[in-house]
Image 1 (cartoon, rainbow, N blue to C red):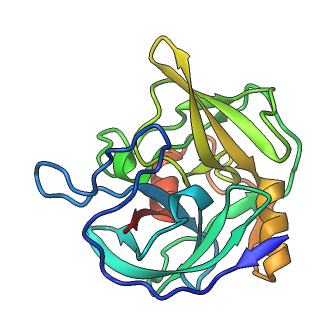
Image 2 (cartoon, one colour):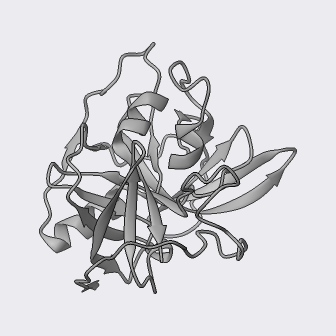
Length: 232
């Protein structure tokens, strides 16, 4: 069952945390930059985007950050089966997500995922291919787990997980510490995401074809798909 919600949004100056264990998250840095509490990514040309449900529940207002500009957002729907939500903005995306049509889990597949804020400040973004691998453990129904080569960053909830072809295979919803500076993150799988969108009657694109060449960096594609989410 999916609970559909329509809300109006307003400008906000403070937000709520993305991670349940990060209760003091702020939306501004010491330099005065806006710091999003979560991430999201576009899946159609109408400004519709996906994010994690827990990142937007209980928000008095919603805002998205893209390329230094902040825009209002509406919460369109949340799922009561998975940690998923759909927002809509007036932002025109340069690129929209293409989901994998292959629903099989491929352990040890190299993947890329990062929060919008961290990705925006990543110095080697233009050349970064991967930063994790897909694990063979399923944390729960409709979920996959990724082992990251470094600690998960603030605001990663709602980030897409891109496979080696640049196709979206999941959406990050929580993290688990794995020791030695590494993290394991849990993502809602592409099949579960597509079922949610189908239930809502929302169009999306999926494919078996790679969206990037074998030697093309995945980080720039992820950055183009993504926005930062601010919850007030």
